Length: 141
Image 1 (cartoon, rainbow, N blue to C red):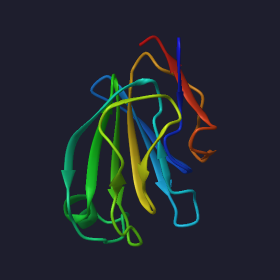
Image 2 (image 1 turned 135 degrees about the horizontal axis):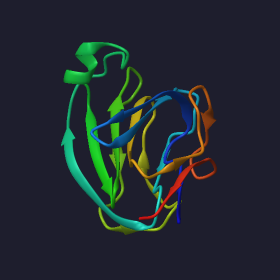
Image 3 (image 1 turned 135 degrees about the vertical axis):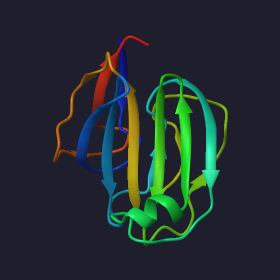
């Protein structure tokens, strides 16, 4: 069993199941910590990066026009959608990472984690999570 730790600080807004995977939505506020940490030991691949605007991340237009990045950690993916106060999503490297290792900075917006369906979640909607400290769940990966 592999423990998945939180890659960001924030508050869980929603948990969905889409195409056989959990989607965990986390609101990252300006006053939350701004480090992005590796959720598991794995290779880290930046799947896509889109430079964009800094609209409120609660709007439909933000989902189309704001800065965003998709990162893959084995079976887990992390999408970061920048918000109003995000100057730029900064990633340090694209390489093999250790769980809890700092991989970048993210000031404000929405973090969406896609987890395998066979993950045993340890979180609920409304929970405050802390990067590197909160266990999101366990899975056989």
